[in-house]
Image (cartoon, rainbow, N blue to C red):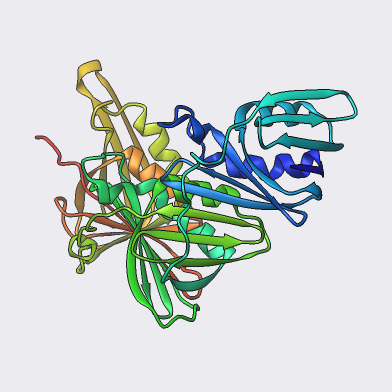
Length: 371
């Protein structure tokens, strides 16, 4: 097996693929890239059994072949080289690999490809074509709300619901919930599945600017294809909770205020909150919002007042400041709307203006106030 390629071109593709290589894999072969060279196209595959990434790069081939290449040493070598043509040669019999640059020659030991896991293929899939911005947006706005609790397996991923010409992304950890939906897609499909957080993070990092993304899925896997890259994620096999049941419908009390002012105030007040609960108290009256926190163990307390537009009964409600700050960081509108029903029911946080065809809703559970 032998080919010539630009070192920076190869490095770019390897860095994308390396996202799916875990630092301490269960099998030694999972530390490798699978190189498969056919007709001037090198296919690079990497997997951690949950997420697989496949990239293609055009090379000048002299001899086709297939070999497993240790990822770390190859990446480190290419990172240390300035951009230049390199010649990659592999002896399939001995699995010996030689890399030649204008500086010299580097030899490393490859592996046989027989042990490399079988990558899932797109059998019996449904396909939806998405705009790259839309999917980036959907991932960015939901992924932070997923749970890290492995006992609640379904909540460790993002729930994707395809409903004909609309797609809904939902994430929750039982304390906060985000529902982001967008239309303007054409599909004849109604289906749903749960994508692991890690796979979506890798997808977001791998996507280039200008491309559409083809999302195809079956019962076990979802395949995201764009340009010369494919990201394959094994779906989470679990039932997602009925998220609509926890979204309060009747919220007569409405607070409208500047997003940045609210977020900055919360950041300052949170310094004085109890470090276990991160509880801040919002006291609402017609024209003002008072944000306060106290940590009785250390005799710390802080209070700030913000001007706002509030319609509803006077109310005092407690929230986890960390959650609110995180949510406000994901919202992009200048003003935000906080809809409330009562101090013991979830609050709904919304952007004051929604993009056409998009709908974003965030829910945060209150922290019960102790008397």
